[in-house]
Amino acid sequence: MKDVKGRILETATRLFSKHGYRGIGVDAIAREADVSKVTMYRYFESREVMIMEVLKARMQAMEEGLKFAVAQKEAGWDRVRAIFRWYENWFGQPDFQGCIVVAALWEYKTDPTIVEMVAAQREMLFELIRETLLDVVHPSVLDQLSRQLLFLLYGAIIFAQTGRQGAAARDAWECASQLIDFVSQGRT
Image 1 (cartoon, rainbow, N blue to C red):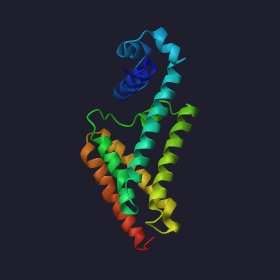
Image 2: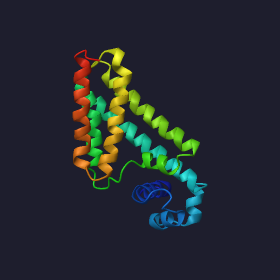
Image 3: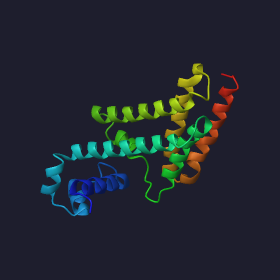
Image 4: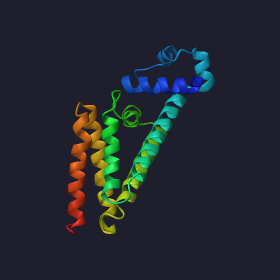
């Protein structure tokens, strides 16, 4: 059986994903996790601390999943494609409700800690994309193309969240592959 803290985090993640951060209070989390509020506060000194823990756990899982997917491929196009396939698989999950990290930014856009966490996740993804493109495109276009692919992935999240789960990542990959092909042929 999962430890109590893990069960609380899993429950909070599921409820925040489904209802948003502001729509769920500690009472609902405690009830769903089958713990008392006293027990919950033993592990998380505040709701805000719990939100930060949820975000950290989700961001770590995303980073590990993406890096594992990329590491399974030799090099080149296949590594870049692995990122988009990871998103396609994520969007296809029955419990996909959108990106909990992006949702945190929307709901807490004035909270500097959350803005910083989201920016760190964005930078991790940018660097991962950049690394996968190193042997695919000329260095002069590497940063610009990496940002463009990042934009495509964030756009795919919105499309997937609005009912295009199956097509969102595939459409984003189609655009990405055309961009990569274009810059690989030296037409920058």
